[in-house]
Amino acid sequence: MEAVRVQSIASLSNHTDTIPSEFIRSENEQPAATTLHGVVLEVPVIDLGRLTDEKTIVELISEASRDWGIFQVVNHGIPDQTISNLQRVGQEFFELPRAEKELIAKTPDSGIEGYGTTLQKEVEGKKGWVDHLFHKIWPPSSVNHQFWPKNPPSYREANEEYCERLREVYDKLIKWLSLGVGLEEQEMKVAMGGEDTVFLMKINYYPPCPRPDLALGVVAHTDMSGLTILVPNQVPGLQVFRDGHWHDVKYIPNALIVHIGDQIEILSNGQYKAVFHRTTVNKNCTRMSWPVFLEPPAELEIGPIAKLVSEQTPAKYKTKKYKDYVYCKLNKLPQ
Ligand code: OGA
Ligand code: NI
Image (cartoon, rainbow, N blue to C red; front, side, top):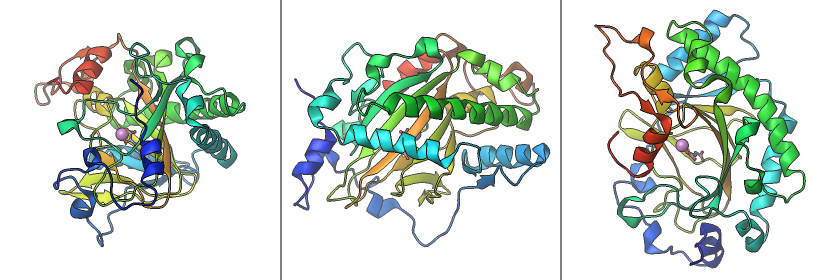
């Protein structure tokens, strides 16, 4: 059976003000009923260009990761042009005729990579208003080019260039996160798999939705990665849960949005918090985002780093292989 794409549903619902019932969230999830407006709570913004003193950077990143689990970085060193190229080729791919996109669709045995729609088991059969594309971009031994779009032809170059720059940003962030819990600078990176850490690119494509008050893009979750580094387009939609309410994350041109994921929470034995987040959709505009999930290799065991466990701070999480963690998370099984 052919998969149903949200992009197709959206183009059919273009002139109506209804959406299929499987996209209507329960009342306690509907964005119109659950988003807090008028209270300005801003996710921390860290300017890496102006801060030259590493101690201050470590403090700011550590504080944001403990308190929020999410922050934005500006002046991160990735040229604006590299980011806009990444965005352009991704947008061009999603604007291709459907048959072209289906050429790299997920198959029952392609794993997470490929063009697709649903990701995890959906609660009560409800669907998110979003299509996606996943493919690994690093390390080279893990890359499967069959899941990379051939069209536009510059897709590969734009992604490779972004990946090269992103690796530098990751190395810095993971070093600062390591120092921020009192470890040596390489320890957190090594615990994440060192040079074998997988960079998994995802593109989210959220078409315009006639009822953005009733639907969600990605439902509330924490990322199962260690860290996620995300580029959005200019259409807002990312929300963060804090103090009992959902808050919009402000769009800052060319900023990177950094999420603490489950594995860094576990490695830090709970000192850093994986951020609970979701996305809303827009009535007139297409929202897109490019998160890269930094993941440990599948076979690597992840648990609280030994130095962070003591009698006063016993291990709060089990130690298990990353692939087993993923299996439980996607199937909504207890960890
Ligand atoms: C995700 C996600 C956020 C966004 O894909 O895991 O949370 O802004 N995306 O699209
Ligand atoms: Ni996420």
